[in-house]
Length: 126
Length: 425
Image 1 (cartoon, rainbow over the protein chains, first blue to last red):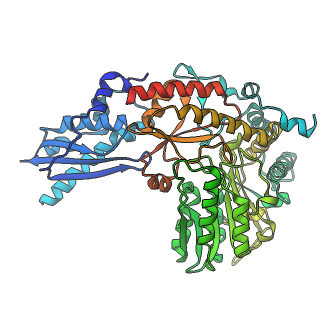
Image 2 (cartoon, each protein chain N blue to C red):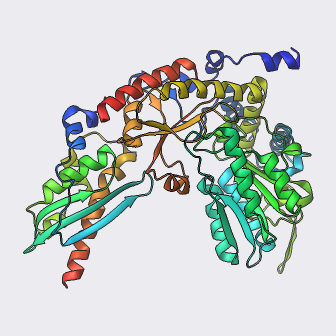
Image 3 (cartoon, rainbow over the protein chains, first blue to last red):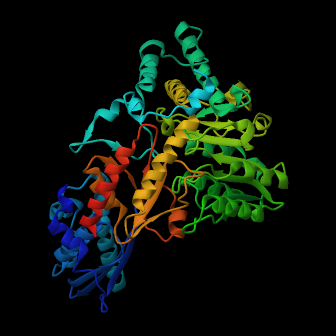
């Protein structure tokens, strides 16, 4: 079985720590992958230019969920600039699982959500 | 062998598999189990050889040169048209236009009938259509100020195929109006595998007004069930070659003969004109007026070889084989708690195609785990987003069979599916 479905990954998938509400969030984005129907609602709490906490809701496949979980863990405590610099390449490194070409879009859905949430936050603060 | 014997002869998938070179390969260390036939079918060596032979011995453009190769290519291309026309039960070969496939055919028509559609006119379609038979009409209606009326024929849980058919007929009848210009509907749903009662739809539509045009999307029916244009009752029939053992990039558009002069070519250019002056062009006769540009000659020849292969097995028997596999699969899937099959489950009026979903799992994960065991299934919305939206599903998993699939493969798929669900749930 490919390494995505190994036990430790499935533990992340079945119980994603960042899948929760974030009542005091001040940045938000909702993205959808029309190919597979995955949706992600991303919420960030940003203070003094830093992402204090991040959370998501929505339904998605294992790749998308694990990727979201890892990205949100990564950006917490980082500055907006640092979070914006998270590239697809870096994300795939961070993920550390074999994913096929067709599922790169599942993995990067969170990246789109993150960028859009940060952009709308910055626009709102201008 | 008499015709009767041939019909009664049970299809032997193990014998058929020997004709398909791809069946010998492994996927991630397991033998390939190909259950994604609704997306595209595999190709027998007879088809591959026909294409190779054309490019090795006869390659030239058609209807152009007077040299030997061009004449050979033209003859083979037109023979392929005749083979396809007979397979479809067309009145004559001229009714059959070669296209790239179903999407191309529908787009071709959506341009070709543009002038027949005025502001306020109506086109009726359904919410189970593949995007290829939905988006072109959506666009055309917007352009012309016409109205696209979509009948909701979402299958209910535990609906029988006969109740389902009645519901479809009832809804179409209620949606018809004096403004209806076209009814366009799938022959077989690519999500449920249900056969839609086209003959009955035709009699309702034509009974209401014989000038209403009826288009049938045969992408999923032409590969699986006997088709006859003289009895189906529609005006247009579109299909793809690659889903019926033929190569990719070839398919057809059948237009009823008496309509051919009314329907404008959707694509214009070389090879489809009678004469051209600086200010106007006169179209050639059918079918050439609808085949602008260099046609896919090798594709047509390959598709004719595919059709001959299908005929040698028998379309009735191919459908029966698909129904047997579907029945076996449904019996197994129904043992899995939380698994739901989309559409009627009885084995009447269906092909070998089953879509399902399991609460709490994503189809992409199921498909990825099955792939690691050599099993190819489709996960997603199968280009039928409106239907998935209506069913409130992000996606589903689809297993679709063909003449080379076996009961043993279904058993293996079932075992691996159960293992996958254990990992995911």
